[in-house]
Image 1 (cartoon, rainbow, N blue to C red):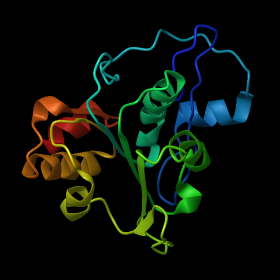
Image 2: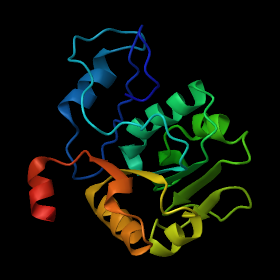
Image 3: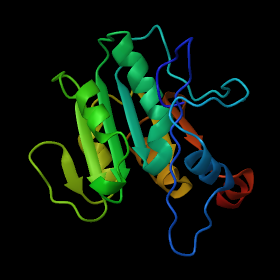
Image 4: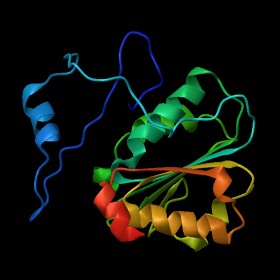
Length: 195
């Protein structure tokens, strides 16, 4: 899901990016080669517990990398749809601007409100700009510069090594694990190996 809940449809966003030596996924290949926008698929209902808390005004921090931006966008869309007054900090890491999904949509949704903070972090092919783009990686030093309230809600999604580093950095900055929610696209085997 990459959009706010809607009773008429679910929007999904599927990345197809073959890199040298990496297999292309069966489902993503099928969707890109055989489906068109507006097409229909028979699927089960969305499930999981990586969902936005409601009924709170605590600041919210979205920290994502790569395709981890997909579920985060659903939450951002929900806040925008409800015209939430929550303070939003949005950090997304990608290889470059060309690899950054939803960039324009994020800027449109969050950029108009000066209370929101946007930060795009590109590991290559980026120049630091006066707006909200930096070259580098999301690390503890960068997190220290954005975390204004360790009692806020933190949503982390991305590659396993990214999430482990971010969660560890947040904890070092005094953020309790009860305030951190995360979702991994890694297989259960990858998760076991990482622990």
